[in-house]
Length: 237
Image (cartoon, rainbow, N blue to C red):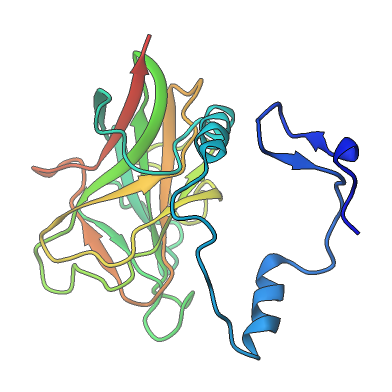
């Protein structure tokens, strides 16, 4: 039986959003969907357009999280930051430094995580004259054979410090939070990907390209003509 109206409590003061209890579910949403899928699933749109409460909830969520979750705010100013450090790290040479040359990520030769495994590290300064709204990563894919990839990996944050000419696979900062995905990248193309990235209070940020397949990709480094960039949309002060 649903709770009586007087038992419902507003959520975060947002009109239209209410909750009666907070509890840990025995199944995740995905578990429920998989179980139901065995008998076939049919989805129907409940409302033709988003309810007014959705815009209020989204605005509240984005302010709390520090980044946008929908479309790029094309009506807002942007600022681009060129990488100040970038490097590849390789499991096959765990103590070697690859702080110059192209940026190569590779999930492995025959299997994900084998001796050919390698990641890319990027560090950007952050100096936004306002409140950051959304960020995206801009990369130029190499023009050499096989620089493109059908699945170029995910983008993670890393918090520990590192130096471009000192970083190796052995001393690399550990990737922490996943903030984006590259997916397919095309040969000699500029690829931009949105990031779920909270930049509030940051003066710099390290991004890690972590492979998700054995289809390697190569990107132009900061020494090249089209270096990696972090593009930030913001609300001016």
